[in-house]
Amino acid sequence: MKLIVGLGNPGAKYAGTRHNIGFDVIEELAERFGSPLTEAKHKGVYTTVRKGTEKAILLKPLTYMNLSGESIGEVMRYYNIEVEDVVVIYDDLDLPVGRIRLRQKGSAGGHNGIKSTIAHLGTQNFNRIRIGIDRPNVPMNIADYVLGKFTIDEQKNMKEVISKSADAVEAWLERPFLEVMNEYNIQP
Image 1 (cartoon, rainbow, N blue to C red):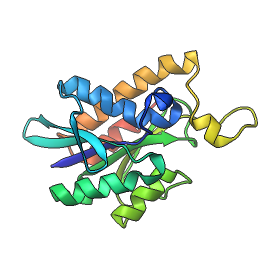
Image 2: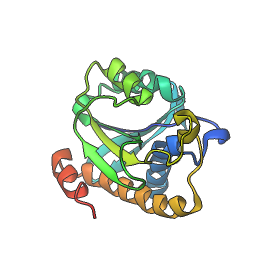
Image 3: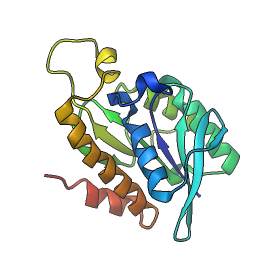
Image 4: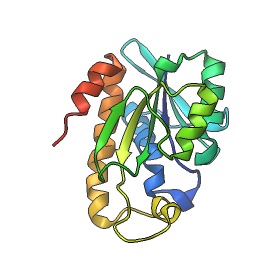
């Protein structure tokens, strides 16, 4: 069994914000599989889907971003999921808007949701899909920026990025992550 986690904050107030792009990818996947997130346990909402012979959980932690690892750790322990069978999808200030980057390990890079995930998994070595949100082009508080909405132009681009990120997840359900990483990291 695999675990696909999208990071974000619960509630309508945060919907459509830069920080919730991980949630958006999970919603896209749930829609593709025709499987709404109806299970509410382990400090999150989730559903179980199947692609071929692979079974996977789509999870949105409801702990708020900074405590995301609590939910991820609980689901992993409950379902006995190994760390190599996890992928975490989240926003990244260090990538241009719309760029995706798959990695098998790395530091938190200042992202509190990833700091929490590393703390609860006890390792930095887990698969991730980082989605670029860029840094603000004017001086402003980073928290305000990541909790802000995408511009109209960015929204058009992000629909494509959400779809491409979901494609990468689906590919991972059929092929090794390294192979998927090599394919999806080649971008214009």
